[in-house]
Image (cartoon, rainbow, N blue to C red):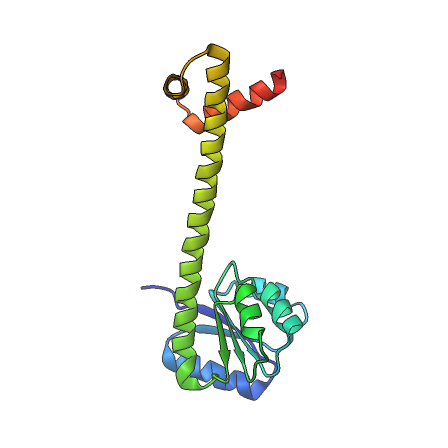
Length: 194
């Protein structure tokens, strides 16, 4: 059996916090912690190690959204922000800040769980996209290093590109290393010698 999700609810109003907690516990078996005070919010959130953060803000501003977003760690967990009203551009600022959900005038018990489910799904999608982007960047950097190493071998030995790559590959196999690692060592050594 899976452990229930741990949710931190950031809500200074005790009555609204109770409504949120009730909606969450009615929907599913969550462990819910309410944080009423925004002072040292990041530390309070880290101490509770939540799977998700739900923040309720009556009257948001760009600064409040930024502060709450940074404190809630949107790259570490899904963060859903419920606001009573929204000025133009705040939803864009919220999404750019990394929030998984930005809901205007939507804090009703029936909507809490579906919004949190959507926030979790969006967060997981963004995590996969960030991982794929990082992997693509790493592969591109490795490709650049391999190309530089092939160029060095081609000039130093007067061999064509396919032979230079074959030499890198054979050296990597002989040493039990990756081609990119051998290429990196060659480029580094050439930089020291040249």
